[in-house]
Length: 152
Image (cartoon, rainbow, N blue to C red; front, side):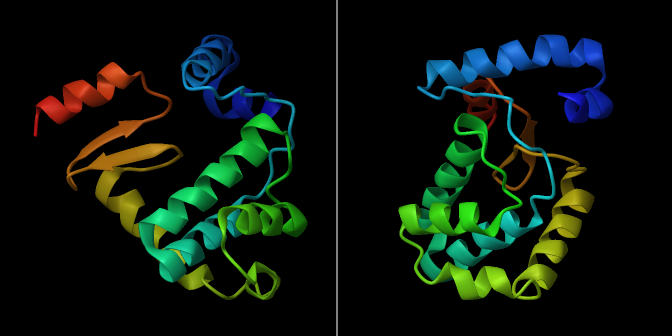
C-alpha cells in the first residue's frame, strides 16, 4: 500500500482501493493488494512480444494472465518465472529466451511509452485510448465507456 500512497496520497488510496475492488468484483475478479510492487518493465516487453507474435488476440490473453498473476494471486511481475508461466498459460511459446535477453523488445516498448506519454499525457495504467483521440484512465465503470462510445 505504501507504493500507492506515495503515488496518489493516503486519502485517495482509501477511496480508490475499495472502488477498484468493487468494479473488479462485478466482473469476477477478486483483486488483492498484498503482492510485491516492483519493476514491471519485463511484463510490458512480454505483452509487446505477444502482439508481435499473435496480434491483439494473443496479447489480450497474455494481459489477462499477467493481471491475474498480479491482482488476484499476489505474484511479483518482476520474477521471470511468473512471466513465463503467464506466457505459457496464454499460449505464447518459448518466452524464456526472450525474457532472458533484456534488450529484446526494450527499445520498442520504451518508444511506445514515450509516444503514448506525449500523445495522451499517459503516466500510468490502465489507460484506454478509444478511436485514437478519447482516453479513460484508471478503473472505470462500464457507464464511463458507454458515455465515451456515445461520443463516437
